[in-house]
Length: 76
Image (cartoon, rainbow, N blue to C red; front, side, top):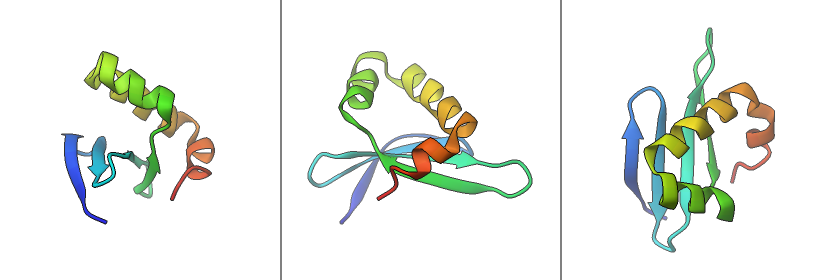
């Protein structure tokens, strides 16, 4: 399934949307080893993006880096 890039901050995060309208958030994590975590946004997160825009995504990326295990569980 193709995804369209909606918003991106280099070496930080990428927000994409698939053909069905689902949003996915990919965050660059790590210090010694660099890896990414990509997961679908839930309803509350989509609402946060729609109402707050980039600042919401920035705060969400901080949460992902601080608590990666919580977001690893949500990967598709």
